[in-house]
Image: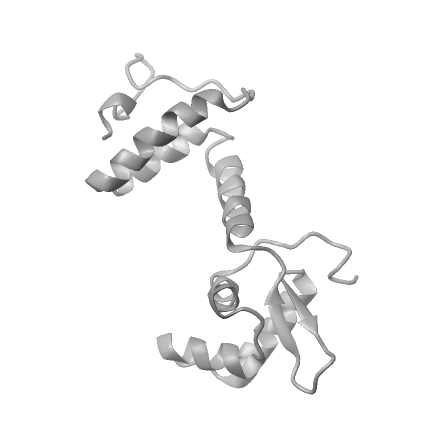
Length: 155
């Protein structure tokens, strides 16, 4: 099946590393992608080529074959990809609960003072967002909550 007919699939860690190169550099040849990856860790040309070919088949990148050296570019923006990954994580690991995802993220790595300020600014925007149906989860202060920090005291 052509990569243009199916929606892009979830990228692996190695594919995300290549996507980051393409987002930073813009459209690039295999050699340019490989050279950029090489700065972080040893990456062979054939490895970069094979990954880009797989990513093309998966619909993660678009390939321009008009020149001798094919040019690859990311099919989706970094923001689109991040949102898809987070949406998938929320659905698979948190039963659709954004609140549970945020609680876990904050418990894992508390925000800096500046990050806490940014998070506070996001709360009024969330109040204006259209309501969506979510599975019932116990509040931090309810009897069913176990070790979950009070969201008002997170930052």
